[in-house]
Structures are given as structure tokens and as C-alpha cells.
Image 1 (cartoon, rainbow, N blue to C red):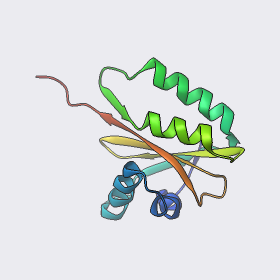
Image 2 (cartoon, rainbow, N blue to C red; image 1 turned 45 degrees about the vertical axis):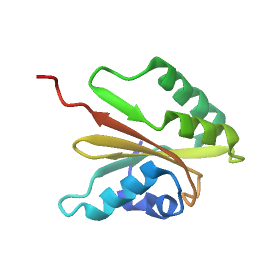
Image 3 (cartoon, one colour; image 1 turned 180 degrees about the vertical axis):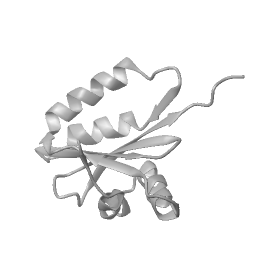
Image 4 (cartoon, one colour; image 1 turned 30 degrees about the horizontal axis):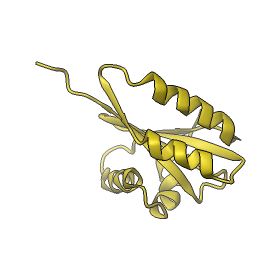
Length: 121
């Protein structure tokens, strides 16, 4: 994955109706300290992305992590006419967002949010 500016996904997030996209967009606009780390894949096939994330959803989360958004992302990947997608990882201290876009980064196909759970006392 190549390092990118997190702001590169903002136009796609603005056009999305996904609540996780709105959440990420708000966080990107609030970050006043150092910008979050962000990386992106090269464009790869939509079918491969669907298979990879379908397996990850079926496998489930690790005990200290909760992932939100699999049903919406999988439905979008299955329904989109796009042949290729890019996955962008935006990392905050408490969460990682995976943003799926078309290769032009104009359309957000979906967002996954992985949050670290607080350790049980």
C-alpha cells in the first residue's frame, strides 16, 4: 500500500450516503493535530475485493476489535458495475477506516470501521 493524504478520499465521502462515510468525513475535518495516517492499494478487481472481504466478514473479528459495515460494503461490491476498486486505509488512534472507491476516487462504494475495544476491567 502506498502512503497518501487522507484528504484524497474526501470528495468520495461527501457524495456518499453511508453513515460511516459521514463519520469519517467529520473526523477528518476535526483533526487539528497531526493528520491521520493513510494508505491506498493500487486498483484491483472488484471480484477479488468481494472475495477477500467476504472471507474476512465470515472469519469475524479478533477479541479486541469490532468491525462495522461489512453487509453494506459486500452488497455494494456485489452490485457495482465498476471492474476495479481502490481500498484506502485511514488510521486514527482508536479506529481504522477502510474506504472502498472506484479507481477515479469520485465514488465511495462503502466504508468499514474497525474499532479497538477497551480492555475489560
